Image (cartoon, rainbow, N blue to C red):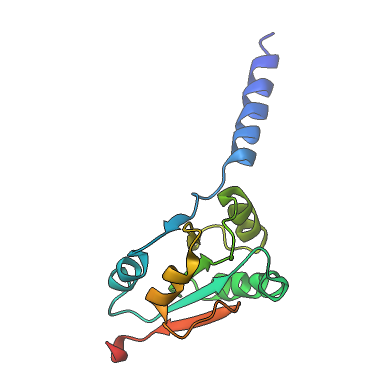
Length: 139
């Protein structure tokens, strides 16, 4: 029994590590764009809009993961902007597979996502992927 306890503790510790995952994405709702803009004011920041239902988005996410891995100081914000609300668990798993599990992420939570897009850019019709840059010089 004495020999079994350290082995059991090791197995449980490894299992706990395997179930740990990044935090759920923040809910992107009315007013979130202003909060996000204010939080990143004065720093160059890349904001990338993507979706679980967007094949090109899923194909390019690993490239964002590689970029973030080589440029750790990059301020990257990922926003899952699917037309229909998606499961935060699916978003977390997809980002983790792409090497983006630790990146700041948000997820559209309003079924009327046109109003969210309007806050970001009044001419945006919702096409994905979309990338924007916050430039400190532009503020």
